[in-house]
Length: 228
Length: 341
Image (cartoon, rainbow over the protein chains, first blue to last red):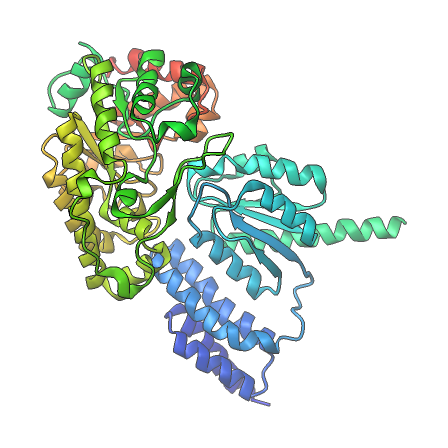
């Protein structure tokens, strides 16, 4: 087992690899982590995700823009692909599955893919429907997979307006399912008005919201079971 | 002074009685479509339906322009992309690109089809412009729009790849954008031949929410200049999202006016660009005009005017389900308040 200093060095390599969009460094760091017998979950969260958090900060500070974030995401996946098979069980206190896609009429999927990445990292089972997804497909897929969470994304105002229809249909069939909307034109006000449970205008917000929502859902279910 | 005179005088920077209320982007309404008995999916493919629908916003609400097309896929389609107009959709779905032209970095070296000016729906658009002009052209200015080179490139290849390459291989992207600019010049010239009074260049993809101001100057600006310089009539450069850090660069592209949306602090832009610059904007066409109350519509119009817009103009396409009373409130408020300034 590696000592603390070596562990720190490897996690730092993963973190910096993401920040500096260096896919090779992330790959190397991940291989070193495995060779040293480090915990894969820890390497993901204290290395890769920690790097992504800094990327989020750089984006907010307008030092990084979307091209940089996309390259950072590639670097993160380069490390994640190696580490993921070694993960025993993600210990976030929650475990969930999610249906995700960009709504019909919208072919933009960059935001959706970033959110998906965060779910991948967190160990969610992700059912990615892609982009320009007919509204009913979200409803069908949720029923089929019994996912706790559905994420709807839209980049254009002109496609966002399909969202309330999906929310209404899913809630009618499965009131316990949590729905999160996201994308540039969405807002907290719209989420509230349309009956969505969460709202995220960017990827890092979406993950936080998603974990909160799933944890809340588990709590509700646990309470129901206790009452029985 | 009728709406046409008012808008044209504004473009020429001559004295006008009040701030005009118009747009260079899509502004058809469901009220207009329903009145004619048309379906949204059908109007993109029929010059007569397109022109008639475009005229209804003026006829019903006194909106001070007529604009075609309605969708954003005309150029990409003429270049060879396959589009989807969602013919079966009940509600309103805007056409999207189904099949891209460039699938990998190796395919970026493309040439324009020699007959671009007569491909896809460009002849249909020219016909729609002529019909629209014949119908309401004496009363309002008739406009059309083309995309910006970067936004068009993002339609004909994966936007994901385009964005990364604009960082990793800027030269290659610059070359592609130059070809896109040539295509857009051809299209804009066809629209001018058909008689449009002004052309809006919509470079939505190059917002500061996505690209840094530095990349905007180095990569986006040169091909934009090429397109705008080729437009012999009035031109408007529109970019949505954050634009405060690039308004000067937008002006450097050489348009008659710039158009910004609600994320732009117009008072700030006005300070930067001076009292003479034409700045159009900048209300939220969905959260204000569609889902806002009449009072919110009115107060937002007043705020736009107080902040110093040269014309009250939406931040994007007007979403067709706009309630008619909000359209009326918008026009009424600009007429009352726009003359006081």
